[in-house]
Length: 261
Image 1 (cartoon, rainbow, N blue to C red):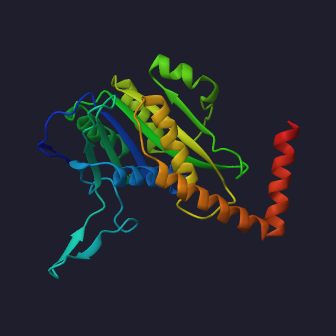
Image 2 (image 1 turned 45 degrees about the vertical axis):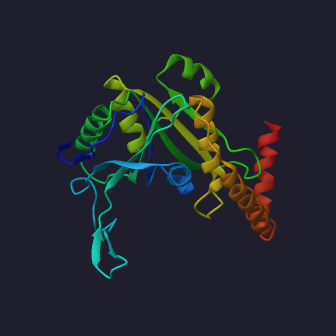
């Protein structure tokens, strides 16, 4: 199937598919959301499902195409298009479609229309959008994942975590709003990361996002490898903070404020 920038591969129908998305850029603190989906793609048998060509939507002087040389020595170009993969999962609650890309720079309304065409083209009635943001949180505490859902039952489970943010938004917020208006079920999940931890990607937050997705969807995931990465990351961050007296003092102040409130 082809229409405008959306190219959907010929494929067998997916079983009650859920589309899970992440965008690199403003919505992706610590690269946690995109890393979560890259890890997920590495862990499941995925097939190419669709491409959304980004000629209209990305500034290629900011996100450049890459030159690649294949095993035969032939040079080619890899454009930063948005790619989507299908995961057929007998025994799981649903099949998955997984989408990754860079947050568009241009023509957001047109991009949302293209995404709606893609979502409807693959027969998807639910979309989960992952994001991450930087905040004054304590690195050693469990990663907080806040969220919202259009499904009333899911919203009940997220009730105490529903974000109250007002202000500028990214593609995650815009796309979620427009998909909901079109009658597509939407879940948004956001991980809160410590702003003073600069190392990326953040596997600890990626793990928290996938765990929350698994809890809400009932989709079972083997996260043992990512859990190991998260434990190593924790150790490295602890050592980094312990070696920096000024940063250690700042974290102590954060803890004092958190536990005295």
